[in-house]
Structures are given as structure tokens and as C-alpha cells.
Image (cartoon, rainbow, N blue to C red):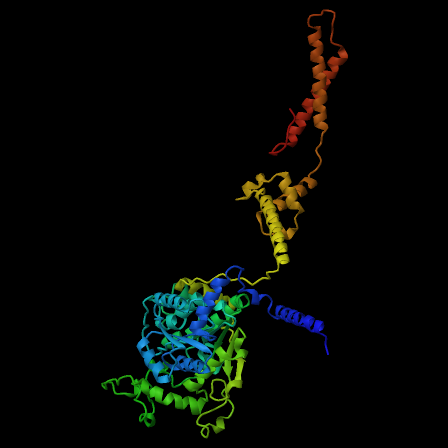
Length: 586
């Protein structure tokens, strides 16, 4: 039996060990939301208001909850009882009817209006959401809404001048994410889920084997603003099916980039998913009508244009034929069929399952539409495989992403250009640091020392004159040149100072190679000048003195020196003939 003092000691020791383990695994992220003392009353009031409105439920925003995948996902999340779902929709009346039909709990579901064809509407939605939720952080953001317009011969345009599929599926949800990122950062377990597609991942048969292929190329269209008349991000001619695939590629690229850019600083888990081919989804409501080229197939589809008589009137488009037979094709031929309900459960799993808190993942289920195909008819098309139905909760796996999705350089361009196109403002985020007083003091001293060193380096750099051209080399003093010579070669490589030192070295080499000057002529001239000076002085001194005479020796010396100088000048002149830099003694 442990004594009472030992038990009292064990409790704080255990707490200390737990704290140490938390620091080792998560660093100081758990401290990122700590507040300074003194705001307890206001915080308590805010917490009370949040608890009264939401209780312990997590807050989720899903775009496109009035139909299809978003509708089934909202229902699955609400059935857990752990979430309050905000349905971002453009038709509130339709959403109200759907919520009543599906039995959504009004206390846990709130519809809000947003029109994804308008950036202004997206901003208004974010403002309304923040005012409505108060201090409650946002725990999940699911970007699900999408339109598919493959049969359009010409693009449809939004109020902002963008092609509809690119703005609804990507640009508006890109803006939405930028506006809600700070609210997500405040959550303990934030997740952003972008609904991708196999068509945007070209390392699969569905994405790389069916024309047109998703490809943003160099984003030439987006560099021009991607506004009317430029519909496609790649700058090429409009193709409705490709625009949809490109938008899904953009979402998957952005999920990966945001993971790299923001996950460590914010703790937000960014992921994308492919829940399978929801062949019965209203997403295909604008799919072009099927036609039959062979006569035996014309009982289920009208003849194609080339099979009709020239005078026969064109039948009205009948996309309902596609929606009738496409699910059959996906069930029994490809095995990629998934019902809306099962797809909704899969998207709910990524939002709910603790295993899916991992960031930077492209989630899929079942491993490939390969297994169990021979039993498809007996199982009603339920084939185990990625994109196929069945497999259950534990069939989820981390799927491979294509090289296009992982192209980080192009993703950065996409991020920057989309930011310009939407007017998005991304918040500055930083890694949470320890509030330890000792570390704060050390950090402050280090910062002060760094500032002093930077100021010193800046002052030293200011003493070096900026050279606009080679003509400015004369600005460098001996001190500057000596300083440059003390630097390693790589420090000045490629700069104008490298040319200076090279020129100095070349000049020094030429000086060493130059021959020594012949000083004999100079000495002769000096001697002659000295002799003549003595003779002239003697004449001056003897001018008023009749007894004073210039000695014959001095006269002879002077005449001899002058003759020698004249001979030297004549010889030097002959040697210098035709030479510009040759000097003739005077």
C-alpha cells in the first residue's frame, strides 16, 4: 500500500508526464488559443452563449445540401447527434422542403443563402455566418457544391464574368475557404474537405483514359483573368466537359497546396475525396442526350445525327435517357456505381472518423473496381473496389494523387492567380510558441541582438557605393577595394564588384610584365643641365669683375655635356619615329 504522501506526489507527477508527452507530440499547438489573464468574465459569457446555442456539437458548413451528395452527407452527420450543420444553398425554399422530407432536426440544421455565381454573395454568406455563430469556432468546412455542363456549345457566364462551372465548382469555394480560415483555426479539430473526382486525377482509367483530360497547362487563361470571353483556365477553346474536370483538378491541387502552406501553422486537416461515381446524382441533369448509331439500339435511344435523313427534324434533347441507363452501365459493366446514400456516408466518414484527421490525403474506398465482378449480377451490381459500392467503414484508404495534382509550382501559380481573380485575402498565420517567461526573455534578447547586427550590416552596406556602370569604378576607395578583396569569391560572384577586382588583377599583371625604365638618358640630361648651370653662374659672377674668368675646364665640360645631350636627342628621335607613346628628352 502506497502512503498518503506518495499518492499526493504521484498525482502532480502524472500530470507533468502527460504535459511532457503532449509537448513531444504536438509541440505548442495546444497553447495557440490561450488568452491573457483578465478576460475571464467576457470569455465565460461568450462560452455560455455558445453552449446555449450549440451545446457540445461541432459546427459544420456544407455547400450544396439541397440535393445529391450534400443532402445525404448532411443527413448522415445529423443522425450522429454530434453536429450542427449549416446548409449553404441558393434555394432556401427547396432546402426547407428537403429538410422536412428527410426529417432534419431544426435545432441542429440551419439553412443559409449563398449564390456561388457571385463573389459578393459568398462574402455576404460569410458575414452572416460569423454574426450568427458568434464565438463558436467552425469545425468542418465541406466544399461539395458543383455543376456539370458537358453539352453546352458555348459557356454560361456568372455575374462576375467567369465561366459558370469554374466559378461555382472552384473559384467561389476558394474565396469561401479564405474567408472562413480564421474561424477554422480556432477549432480543436478543424477539417476542410474538398470533393474531388476521379476525372481530375489522370493517373486512373476514369481520369486519364476518357477524353477530354483535365489539364490546366500553363494557366494562360487564368493569367488573363479567366473572364468573358476567356472561359477556360488553360486559355483554349471552351469545352464543357473539360471545364468540369479542370475545376475538380483545381480543387485537388488546392487541397494539397493548402496542406503544405497552412496545416502545420493552423492544425487544419486539408483533404480531398472521391466517394465513387454517383450515377443517379442530379449532377447529370444537364448531361447531353444519348443517341444510337446501330439500329438494334434505337429502341432505347434516338438515332445519332449522321444516321438521320437530312430532312428529319432533330429530336429534343432527352438527358433522362442518360440518367436511366448510365447507372446500369456503371453497376454491371465498370463496377464503379455508388448510391447517393453510400456516397454521403463516405463523405460523412471523412468529416467524422478520427482516422481522417490526417492532412494532405486523397481519400477513396475499396482499392479499385476489380474484385467480385463475376458476381455482379447476383449482388445487384455491388462490386468491391475504389469507386465501387460496398466495402464498409473500414475500406477507406489513402489513394495516390497524380503528378498534376502534386505539381506544387503550378499550384502556387493557381493559388496566386485565383486570389487575384476572386479578391481573396488569406490571413497571416504563425506557429504557436511557448509562453514560458524564460524563453520569452531569451527571445527578446536575441531579437534585440539580431536587430543591432542587421543595423550594422546595413550601415556597412551603405558605405559601398552603388555602381550604375563600369564608368563608376572610380567611386571605390582603397578601403572599399581592400574590403572586397577580403571577401570569399562566391560572395561577390556575378556582381559588378567582381568585375572591379578582375580589372585590378589584370592591371597588376600588366604592371609586373612591363620592362624596367632606362634611366640613363634622364641622368645625362640632368648632368648637362648641372654643367650648364655652373657655367652660367660663373658668367654672372664674372660679369662685373674684370679679373674673374670662366675656367677653360668649366667651359669645356659644359660644351661636352650639351653635345652629348644633342646626340642623345637625335638618336632617341630616330628610335621613336612612328611610335605614339615614345618620349624624346627635351
